[in-house]
Length: 300
Length: 300
Image (cartoon, each protein chain N blue to C red):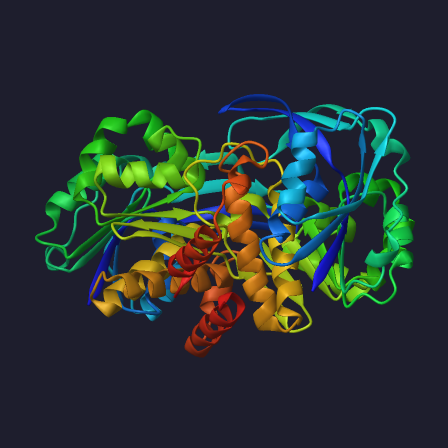
């Protein structure tokens, strides 16, 4: 099977209690692709500027990520600058330069349109709708979003959600979208009243909650003593989650739960170092090893 | 088997988004005893004032809670007034009147001193030490504490911790006690450097983490759509946890994990109504039913 992912490829400048890094590889589609490529084939659709490094392109290519849809435009690559402090549960944005990403109008290469799985990373829901329209008949459509769109493009978002199999969203965003102060109720309200078949609420260091037609699945995060840089954890989770689902080829409850654990495992690696550094040196055997360690740490 | 619990019996005035209640039954030892009495025998050691209701005494007696150690003194019962807002994860204390609790000097009735299990609810660690000294040879000693003692009575706390089998503590307190910003590391540092055999970190709506010699056990909370009043959730958890351990009579890893789930289940009932109202009308079959529902919601 194979996944098309549409999102951002970026350079990030990040400050955490563990250090500072300038212009390191980032972006939702980058984290997603790298993570998902451990499970299945991935085709990336994004835009970068002339400053995008050959080294970074080669890295993605080396993971087998299809780059036919990675457009290079005049100008600079999307740049995000942020800081994490204390318990590092929330990023403080210091600067956002959309650059070429501001005029992003994703066009799927012809060969991608018949692929079975689509992940719409966090971009303008109007663009997400346009991308979905370009797909022929996806078996699994998943998406992420954020407060900026929940507040500013609610109509487009509400038009999109009924077409979605899996909405991935963080807890504060879920509460905001549903207008509910309780996260569990927010997830159910979104699923029952806004149309996505399943809602996956990402809670950072507290794990995930999946609201399905059958009820709730709750799973803690992998207990980590050292979190160096949380950037990309959510997109890495999504890559493991959707990658595992695409590999399984089904959406039954057992696959959903296994996928949630793979997503959790992948995210736990990402945060152990800056940028994609930990994922770059990650062995398949480490993924399976931590999957087993996760089962051991949660088994009742 | 049987547990001695030493802590507070109080009247609380509570304001939550679901309403306001004045002078309702509360206190750490009250929640603990009521919860634990579903699993094993409980003897309560606490102090109340002349205003303590016959009805509340009868309720505890009706649960089979031993009240020989419940001393009535001249003056008023401990009174706490607090408010919860928004996601209700934190109580805002509006008023605390220690009243008779200020001169609390717990004396265990002779018959209690040979009991196998002791729970020291959140009181001055110097008093906790005095109580521990009165016990003959407990098989299981557990305790709770809070930031007020971590900051103000650190020496007494550090003297007490090596004598303890299970420290129950919330996440912010664990980080403060260990001087660590990461909760997982904080739990390990407390266990390895301060002496308690196991550290149970309570994370409210995000569940619990148990740090044992064998490693970590992490468990999410039961997904609840309605939280009416979080007061007493931590002590109710402790009651289910220690109650289940006392009933099992062992501290092996399987018992610890089962106990953590029973604690989680009991806490999930408490927060569904004000004061002990939900626990008062709780049937044993509901406990087992929710235990099974918890397994179903977390099974991978």
